[in-house]
Length: 400
Image 1 (cartoon, helix red, strand yellow):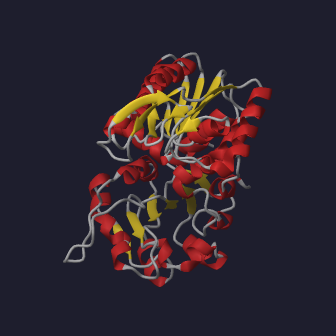
Image 2 (spheres, one colour):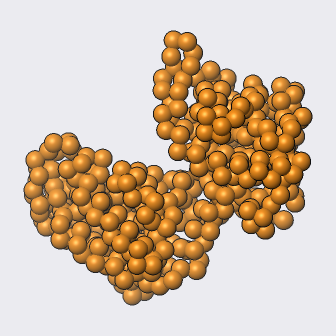
Image 3 (cartoon, helix red, strand yellow):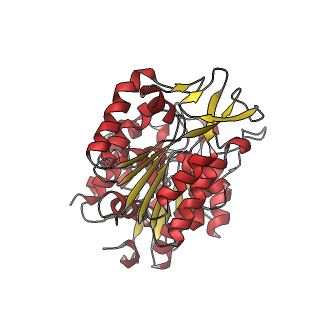
């Protein structure tokens, strides 16, 4: 049943959210403030649906990587932002399990919201401890996983806890959207299908590339990882980022793609810098003939147009990873051109999925996030899903 169709009248919904948000440094008075509330906003539709249908909400999340009880990483700091966004007060439990938590959560009235303390104040969370998961489960009647960013972790609150709710569990709107988007791209994509894969290293994306070979018609490769492919074929890449120990894997991948009839697009020209700096001098060189003293920082103008042209007739496009050092405005044109091309394809009816932290940052920076079909919220989870791995947080909810 779709989440939209669930009714929570009189039910305490225990929701795993991802409130691992950026915050200011600890102030003299012991307070911190949220600097980016994107993840909190992403959870609001699920929370509000439970409340509108007569339920109460118990929220649980991790924050940072605490070693024991760390006041700087208490979820208490998130309360003001959460209350402002929800437009109501939120009760806070100073522990996530035990009597301190149950005193807050057991008697919640319909329409009330409670927030549990940082799950990772307990080592049992990351260990996937079943007893700890059972203690967490006591805080609710119905389990909802709406934290895609942690779906690849077999933690107590993301995977193990679901067994305590054999029939009373579901994905929230955020997770439901992520699962559908992944399935649409990897399982039932309308062709032609293109994958635009960028980023720094071949080694970090090799499993993704291999898994995509049975699913795409076109493969566009940019970013630092492209120079390993070029060097493996005998090209000169100057001081560009390369992984010489990945030459064989790169060549094998190109050979496999050719055998499957997949179009592979590598940058033919590169915008280079004379150092890794936002104000470095710039020159454009053929990607296979970059002189010493220069390093690839962005795809060149010819490559931008070639890549954009390759995407123009596609019905499904996946984008994971930037085309260059987009953090530096002078080397962001390639990434921005890809973003524009994907928006144009979306406007022409293509289904477009943008996933991975840097890609998401790029479309947000360009102000185009609302102009593609779907923007994934989970970097690591998205990558493992694209690799074809089963994500524990998803499998646990789907198990009957």
